[in-house]
Image (tube, rainbow, N blue to C red; front, side, top):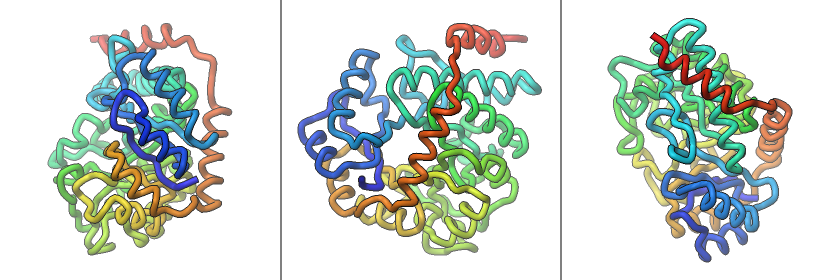
Length: 327
């Protein structure tokens, strides 16, 4: 199995995509809004993917709530942003975070997803770029750590594997890594606190940020100094997946970007463009996943299976919605 998760072009699995996935056996596929229309279409696509992917491959979706949501009404619930949850304050925000995580987990598991790219553990910053913005629970690291934890617990209760992102913290960045490479002088203890408090999560995602005092040449995603010396040093031993390697913060061909991330210590290279040429370029140039990566993937799956609860989703939705509209 190749250590990569890749995107698809549209609502159906094309013949070229099916042949590529069957031949090169990636660790998984990630779906976006361009791949999701309604439950019937999504179910057909999931069946087609299961027919060509390795048995233990994962299906991932970016479903944070708020503006980052691939499953949307009228077929799926609308979910509040992290900022809206955090703004409730007190125990109301804690309960709303768990309920939202559980609801997202339930609906994503029911749709066939294994991994949900949430919670955002980035600490909001007044002068940070809006690429994080309302995706952050709060400006207080302690509050982000707590709400991120209960949101992740909700996802696990719903039956999916959560991904803490974007390590070691994206909130202070003043540039959007989708467009350009953000640069900071150094890591920040406050930024890292939510990650350190959630080091037992099954997955983390890296940040495409260059910390010039730590590694003046490579962003964290592609920096052995950052991954070994900062990210893993916080105690995290789960699956480390790169942020989307198709972002303009990075340079080089898709394969060069992926190989650099893996060489730096990422377990999985994530490339989301959905362009078949990009996908082939990556998968044709990657070797097999390392044994430790396979062990981490297996452990993440077992964690979600052991944590899953039988939940009354409608009751949870009613409780959550009442919290969100309470004066």
